[in-house]
Image 1 (cartoon, rainbow over the protein chains, first blue to last red):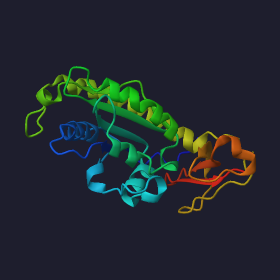
Image 2: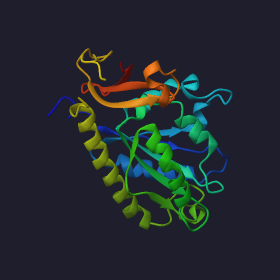
Image 3: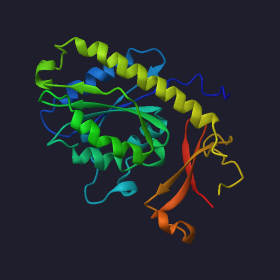
Image 4: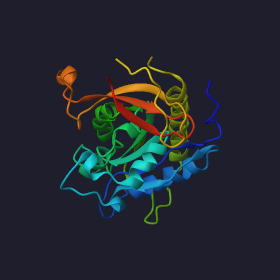
Length: 192
Length: 58
């Protein structure tokens, strides 16, 4: 067993996956970020795709953003907060994710779906799964599902529905377990 | 087939672990990989600093 990395905390950034004005997903992302930051041995930070400023006249490696790519490279897992827009994911989120490849391979990912309606973004989560797989990310079986998000937080972003605390705790514990296992695998388990 | 030499971390200089192979559609495939539609890349991870690097599989 390789012991070199045991002193490095698990790093799990939160990707806020929509650039829209008035996005409720920002409240979700900041809530999940806060819960993750409370956990011992875990580092996190918010990555807001609106702040990165990706070019939309090219794609893939050609639009790579060094800060975004460095954060994903350092990450052991990702949390993606994705609102459901017409049953799909935001185009800019896909555009951003497509700018990396090697940075994702054999790393854990958990998805938080956000919707104004009652289904908690389940359709956007399902739509993202094949994309995650092709990028080389490993999905967990817990999702964050934020239904009627406009009622879950007040206008300042304060959580109104405390039941999310327990649910996100389950989500985070599963994600961290997967992130640790995959780090061990990346370090110690060879294809040869 | 994987290269036999361990890849060295560009930052740490220590041996990296070859933990995956991935098709990279942004790179033209070699004649052996035409059916893949992209180039086959070895994915290596540094146990020291956590860096990932790729190199073309041969």
